[in-house]
Image 1 (cartoon, helix red, strand yellow):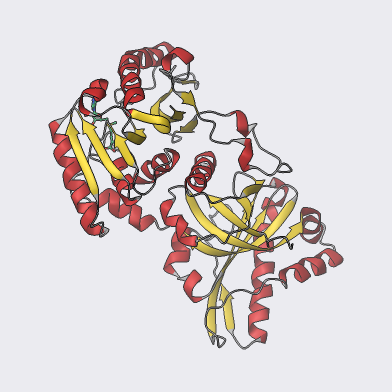
Image 2 (cartoon, helix red, strand yellow):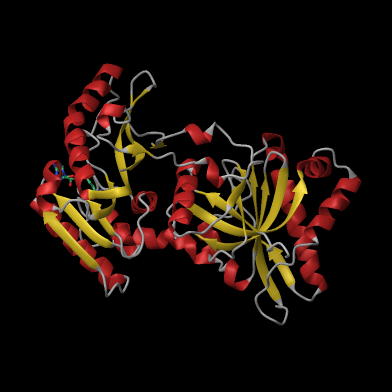
Length: 437
Ligand SMILES: C[S@@+](CC[C@H](N)C(=O)[O-])C[C@H]1O[C@@H](n2cnc3c(N)ncnc32)[C@H](O)[C@@H]1O
């Protein structure tokens, strides 16, 4: 029996690489798409699989910026010799490696002219200084190669202010590089470099539309749709499952669950939010032609969920109950702890009820406040403590099963439990927990 051919893909994560990776691992498990993470860094991951990946998966992910198919790999020693030490033989070897890449020009007859892209993702700081030179080298190589088949080609430049020569996903979209020409991704890890061609890029305009064009918006309290999608994916939500957000607000998380074709249930204590969620979901149903959309929004108190929702009828929960008051100034550590203590009864009562209505073995994703303090430290909630989880087990988002045994891991990932999302200037961020009943 012959071994099935292995295919390698590279994923470029968003700013929060851990969140992006956790989401990818969770979605692939939900969809039964098997792969092993074969290399891991903060700026790209590669996965190896026996099954072709449908690149439109990018629209179902909130945290992936680009997906590329890997064409060849090259040792970092060759890259360093070619560009840092400028060794001729290494440069020849580097060119030979590139010659394995036949950029996928889509038309059968060569184009007269084309604009293509070359983007570099680098983990090794030694190479940062050389990134522009490497990008020009690769760009010139493909330019010559295309010229030899009659295509006048040029590769896209970058503003000088850009830290690395990388095209943004918006640039790739606007220039239609995937459909009309190509983008080369050159990803340099610690031991190995890979060359890939971009298959799909994140479309921020769809997320913006869901954020800004829905009829009812509420700036404070609302979660960004990209994060809402990540939470929905972490909850293992999929088509036909019964999904609940019991603190639904204006329905941002519900909207992403509806797009995943789940049967959506929402609840809020505020009647205005019930109306807002219904209006927004009706808009999403029209806008995304979800004729079979199934949703119900209930007015109620999430501390008494089991009165309104039958026992063990919910397949997945993703929710953001309360991140505490808007802060004008950074609190002291004691001030931050006081905020967390005040919220504890709400979380406690909700968890108790959630345990009743969730089916066995199913996931719940929950955010708690992650508070920056005056002295630069952060104060978390105490929800992970055994007595606080009300019988829920914490889920490790980076389970060993996802990684090839030879993949070097960074930051002892497999032991990390919660995921942090906080902007540099934010006083309160989110700690995202995944629990299983
Ligand atoms: C942080 S907001 C959720 C925001 C929501 N994810 C969105 O993007 O619109 C929390 C919501 O919980 C609701 N809420 C507060 N206490 C509640 C309770 N005990 N039961 C149900 N809803 C509650 C508030 O009315 C508010 O809309």
